Amino acid sequence: MKTLLLACGTMALACVFASADTLNGQLMDSACVQQQQQQPTEQHASMCAPTASTTSFALNISGKTYKLDADGNKKAADAWKKYNSSAERAKNPNGADYQVTATVQGTIKDDEVKVDSIDVH
Image (cartoon, rainbow, N blue to C red):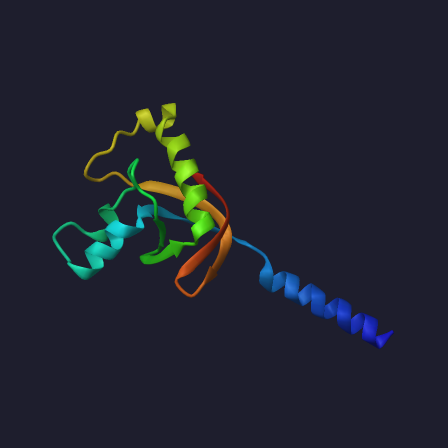
């Protein structure tokens, strides 16, 4: 009985640590962010809004930038295309101060987000 309780407790604890978080932040073009970090200019990295050609994405949460994993990049590209063609996007044209926000279900490991799902808004 003790072994069964211990096994159940261990599995429950593992599920708690493996569960996805809800992350809200600014969706960015990861290549632009990396370039800004290597060659700082007057254009701050926060101005790296994604474009139609963006293939690698990052999520800026409270000033800390996390790259999305490979699967997350595909999901972000799909979500971005859907958002970019929506009526909501038409109300918010891309200007110098334009920021794209996203809600990601996923987990952070080091400087990368393993994305389960993403919603761009």
